[in-house]
Image (tube, rainbow, N blue to C red; front, side):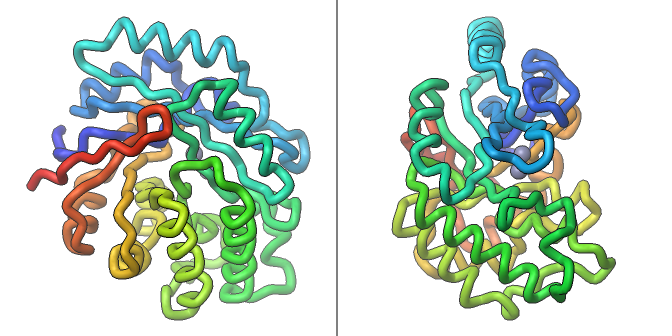
Length: 272
Ligand SMILES: [Zn+2]
Ligand SMILES: [Zn+2]
């Protein structure tokens, strides 16, 4: 398989408690799928509600596993050290500390919790309709990315769709345009990348996160930095549905996509 997108910047290994494959197994899968730049983004969710299950990343083992594969596969694969950090407004300083401690290539900032509760726990949806729930989620993202500066990529912007308890749960941009535009403008002002996260296809939503309309809107507003990630929790999901992501980017008018080395963007051409 070669879809001409050669980066996958959102990959979880066994260093995340909800993922299944080692760093090395993921590297081998990436090579077999024509991915030549692979970024690991295991979870750090500080003050995660409940058991805090995503906060058990062992820095030394993580970095040593990544470094081992960097050396072993350098002919075929550039391996990047990333983190997916669960943003919450009170964690502003922590992202700075973590970026130094891990000497990261980049940080994906994701909003996994709203009002101190995980989205998948459904508390957000209690006594709220779909539009109101999604608006509350977007307000939380705005608060997080206004407060916190040290992230490079906004993760899975509309992934709340995964969890809304109804079959009819796909977001319509026009219902949330004011809040989504605020998010996109903050990203553009802060020179942060928008992630195209293809996991939505695996969740049977028939779309990436965010929706095509949102990707197009980011471009219209002047957004430049696009990163592509599968959010793989299994090695065989690396690069999944990247052909669809590529077509959407072309249709939205993008000619380039990006990855980060030591938190500096590097651009690649989208080849046809
Ligand atoms: Zn996430
Ligand atoms: Zn993830």
